[in-house]
Image 1 (cartoon, rainbow, N blue to C red):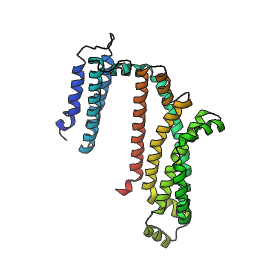
Image 2 (image 1 turned 90 degrees about the vertical axis):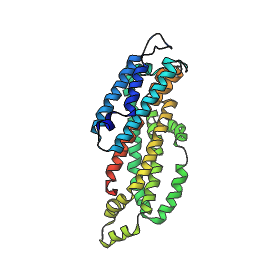
Image 3 (image 1 turned 90 degrees about the horizontal axis):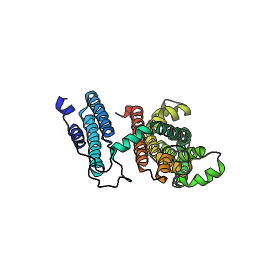
Image 4 (image 1 turned 180 degrees about the vertical axis):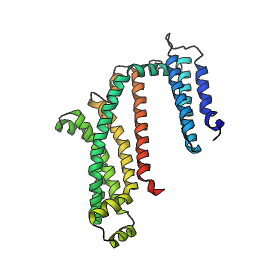
Length: 306
């Protein structure tokens, strides 16, 4: 790709526009937070230039730069509507520089809460996947049991896991264990149903070919049926992952003493909307990063489909 395609794009132009906007005086506060906003955007631009130099496929580069351009556009509008023209109330919508400054000040606290949230997600999610996939394989392998279990899973899976929180609080020793239990339920049923669906829909000629080779049941399940059902299984895993983040944040806002949901709820109750926005942005970034890594894993495990 040419130099122009890599470095002279709309995203780079918006970066320059954002810097020029900082030359206008702030109207909302005596203290200027422009330095934090400029530092943040320069860091993003440096990362953009490095990634632009490394990406080889034009489609991937276009997607990446479009996302960066959208981010810069959002920051420009946010800055103009808050720091420069005071269109939005500062108490509810602090300028970007103020938010970035608060993020730097609270970085240690944020890291602790992120670790708490991710630990709960991983524990509940992995427990559900490890139990749902083998169970779905065995039940899906038996067509009669699989058809009956499909309707049972639809019924139980339609119940929002968050309604079990009162019972979890009454029965389990800590709120952390309640959160893990809720994540387990949020993940188990989508993965279980998708696994059974994938097994029941494996092409019969694949199974017949394996029978001709006289493979045993264990090899049939885990070396033939499991790979064939894997695309469908990942659909359930994606659904479970998305719902898990939503439910974890909701659970942490109800009664937890750590986690990003608690961070947002605690400071919103205190009327500290700067920290509230910091928490919302951090939650969004964490979800995007984990989803990106999960999709990378999915593409690697399903590379044979290409």
